[in-house]
Amino acid sequence: MTNIVVDNIYKKPKKTFNTNELTTLQADSIFLNVLNEFAIDSSWISIKKKKFDEDDSTKHEYHIKLPKDLPVPLVIKELSNKLNKDITALVSQENKNFGETSVKIYSNERLKLKAILEPDLNLVRERNNIYFIITDASSLDFQQLKELLKSPLPLTFSLLPSDYSNTIKDTIQNYFKDYSVWLNDAIDDKKYKIEAGYSKELLRSSIQNIITSYKDAVLFIVDSKSKIYNSATYNFIRDYFKSWGIKLYTDTDFILFKSSKKEELISLMKFYANTKDSSPNKIILINKDEFDLLNDELELEKKKGTKFFAVKSYFIKKVF
Image (cartoon, rainbow, N blue to C red; front, top):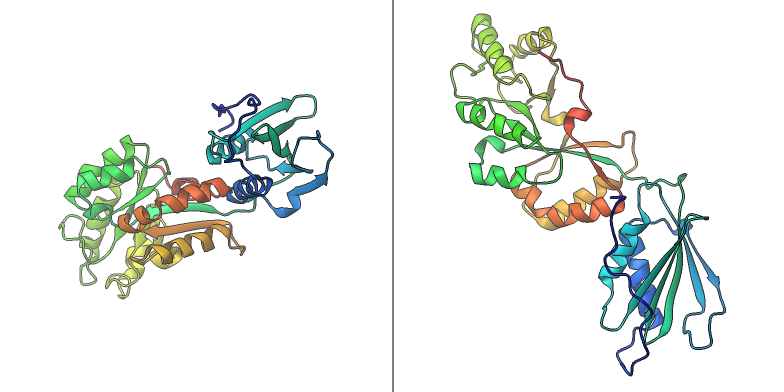
């Protein structure tokens, strides 16, 4: 991000008779909207009255302090993208002695906005850390899976032990993604199947097969609504996994996104990205359809400083 190059830096244009001129109010609005998209706190924005040249139409100057994780060129590039370049020109100049960058917007040869952008290493955007686990990976066809694998986000794919899951787990890792294991009553492969009525010998065999087949799993999750979880046998299952150095989690240990409505999902995403509670780390269980509905919102969240991490960076896993 720090190496972003602003492609469109313009020289002050020659005066034209273009009546479609950007007003100072419009310039202010565009600039402040960009700052809002990057979650710049109002306390980091100051406005000073200034006396510019006689023909200049703006009478104030913005001074903006930027947090350490937000490069100045990124803000300038976003601002440039928002402007109608047929009637405006953006000029930026870095003052290396003071670490500041001056930004000016002109329209019809008149200065419509001036701002000073100053990085401040002491400022931090208070956003949460998001971790995504895709819950339906084992039911996706290869094309659907590949769409998710191409995501720039560090997704983790939850796999139900099966022959199909065995074929896709290596593909997931080839795309530098991770997988977890999902345990419930739907496991029908005999070598992995776990049932409440099984003998301890059969349970040990199934558990060993799961662990050895999915040795690179970053975590193991049990469906809290499953019969195996709600049976007297579960204590034995949990303890046997523990003897292999594996802690079993349940889906209730995480945040479940469950909605087919885009508006509801966006509202949930905004809440968990910004809510201030005991932990800034939010591990979210979500299926592919829900994740796809959030694509645009996730881009907005990245702008605001929300960080997305791989689940493995949060959990410590036994190495086999």
